[in-house]
Image (cartoon, rainbow, N blue to C red; front, side, top):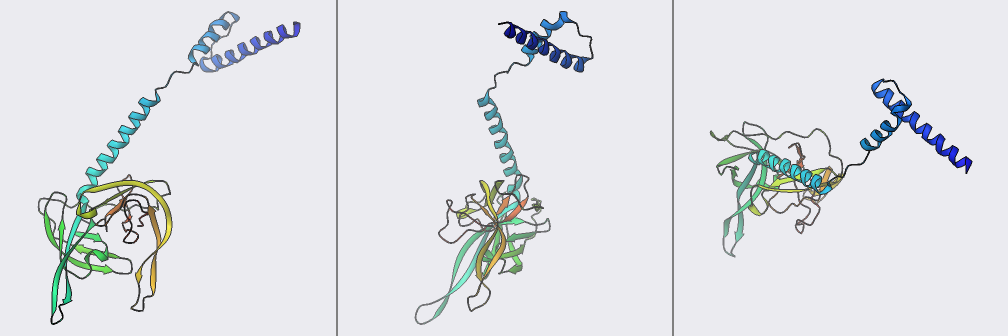
Length: 266
């Protein structure tokens, strides 16, 4: 019993010494035994854990992140275009060869303010006419400037509308880490102004895109980014962006059977 009393007494003395050191270090004041009880009470009251409303914090965080995405959408939308093309296919009826027009569509993004627009080569390949539709409803004809079938990239050019200043999208400087947010913009199924959200699922993939020669020898694009953001027919060449509104890559779907449940590559 005597030892227990001594231990309690020693503990009180040590606690008083610790409190004294904390207060002296903070305020450089003179310590006296008469202040021990008040100091301990003060320490207990200031160190008590305050209740946290986790639901309120979650709601605030969610609302803030939603507003960030909404503002980013408003900022980027004028830089994404819908591209409509007309191609001619030669069809035989058994007696004659007839050219039948067909229509296709894809997406593109504004490269500079002089009218250059980047899209996928397969969107504009063999096109007889190319029409670009802007987010404000205006449209204009475009001409093919350059194409790289192996990279599935093409550049078209329009005359900038007088009342719609073109807004280029900046390029991201670094490869995004896996797990970062990815935003896909484009015109899936011809529905322009569409944004979907996902994450970077993988980087450094190799993606087979076609044949180098008529013999059928295949080639692959290196350093491809994979995402789970929903991408559907018509998204080509919409953009995969980061939360800074910077271009990460062009959008491509994996095969004809891929839908919003697949894993698109870029």
